[in-house]
Length: 67
Image 1: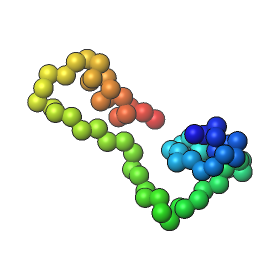
Image 2 (image 1 turned 45 degrees about the horizontal axis):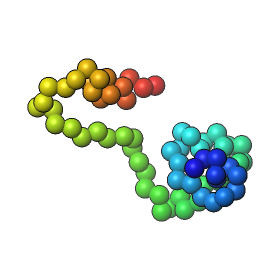
Image 3 (image 1 turned 120 degrees about the horizontal axis):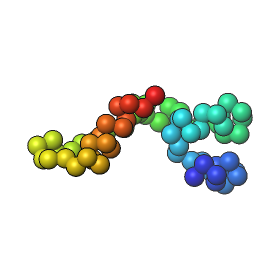
């Protein structure tokens, strides 16, 4: 979607961290800001009563340690 927006093919709904540098350089611009809700990150819902695999534990813990 980013490549399409940069090529002028139309609007794209992108995470801010991906679009921000392109917005700052004037390659992209924000549209419909008043219609876009503020989104406070990712959310993961899962059953905590089950035994989790090491891979799943890594998946759950990874966003907590992101800087």
